Image (cartoon, rainbow, N blue to C red; front, side, top):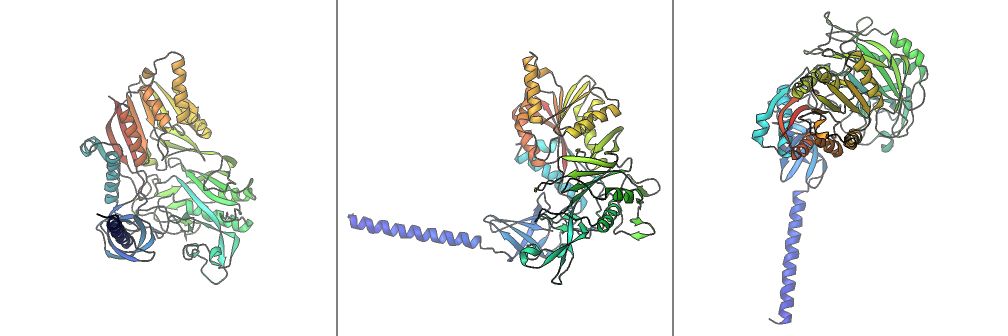
Length: 560
């Protein structure tokens, strides 16, 4: 073959290659040609942790808000990426047998309860399966082993179960163009009024309080939240009246101006004590005395069938069929505000609490009981939000620890000492570790309050303190593999730091009890511990957060 013929052949091959490449590109573009506002028909087969329905079509994964598995929907595209897209339900073509009518009037708008439209029986089954699938896919366990080791999932009541609430605050905006002043209508085409050239002004004496909308910092106002304490709407209304009277401004993220950022409430369900904290974009609270006087005169008697203030003034939706298990025998909630605190948060980030909390009137903490143990809880302390389910969680942790009275226990991420003290009832010695100094102070007081003197508590990060303690024992010539019998882990959502897990493996306890609020990080850490010589013995799901996508898991691992 001549050089000329070779050249022509090479050019021909190149043209064919370019043509094939062009056709492939067109095909790819065709496969991913969805644009915003396009409509598509989907069958929903699963849910994300955020409660979005999952559907698949033409190689793309679709995340569809307000849908449930079993739905057939016509969905409108909100955002399209290379391999996935976000959408919302435009029309429900066929309703899933698991779909129910939400009780909450702002379900779908509020970013809080993502599963109000899903039957509770299906919610529990889905959560149990999520735990199992994480253990299989991430931890590397076989489906047979996961099924054999599970102890099911423990459900709870669906309303009035939360003992803590956080309400963002803004100054209400008045739209001068004649548009709605409803907070839910502020956004236009996904933008804020100021960015759409709609003239808006603050009404600093009129505050908007509620919860953030789904994936936004737009406040959704509601007269009541069914999973929070029944007294909260009365307290919020009192704060609004005080703020209007004394012209207290709400915080604006866009400008960084305004005083009141969040309303933070804690309630001791066993005692009825309520602690109120105002999160401030400033150093002090003007007219705090006047607010405290209003709060002291506030009647928080809440009837089981609804909310009342004074003479039958309706405050919105009442308690539904599953009422708060901590209501009194007379069918009423009788909460009382025992303290007013302020938290200073002048930062520009999204953190709710700043580092400094001051009690300006009354007590700086509330009292509550879990089982037979009493606890003092301050504003920044970690304390599980669902008391009834928390008792099940800690009961399982105690059961899995299998203590006889001769064991030494390390409780990492101990918070105010809740799990530590549960274990101390049956252990020889318990060491608690927590990064929040105020929580450790609470833990020490709680140990003293409950007469449990076989406890010691340390301030610091688990990934720093535990390895340092292990190294210190080594320097003293001790066999670290025989110092600790049980380790309890209850980390935040991100799971344990590897340095902490490495120190646990060096301690080589007989049993590890792991309490987790995130299935993914739990499974990742279990994989690490299994590779270090531990076996999964048991696991149980506990629904600490009904009507949301979150679930708690308690796991027992033993040394091989």
